[in-house]
Image (cartoon, rainbow, N blue to C red):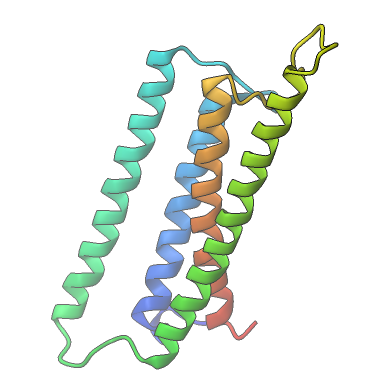
Length: 164
């Protein structure tokens, strides 16, 4: 295990961002799910939850960025080296690939669900665990995609710094 003193600033920032994102994501999951299923929240309830998650995420990321920017001002040399940039790029690539695949899965699910609902002999609509016509379900899927993509990005960075 690498000591905090031995980490680069980029590695420290990746750790802090990862921890913050996981906590905010768990808060989101706790407030939108009950017993493993997605709750159907009212429009105002969903709005309050999402505004809270967005504001919390923005504030925490701004605090993280400002703390690391202030630490950088105290030093004369540029903190990011080629390795830091390469690792950041690797994390961003993995996070983006996950997000792209997840979004395509959501799109495919929507297309399939729409096709099943419009079959000539369909007497009942789609009855699966995820229903894109339910706003809470769609917001859940899109928010999960965004958070998990960012968590993957920072996890890959942390693992890359450890040499794994």
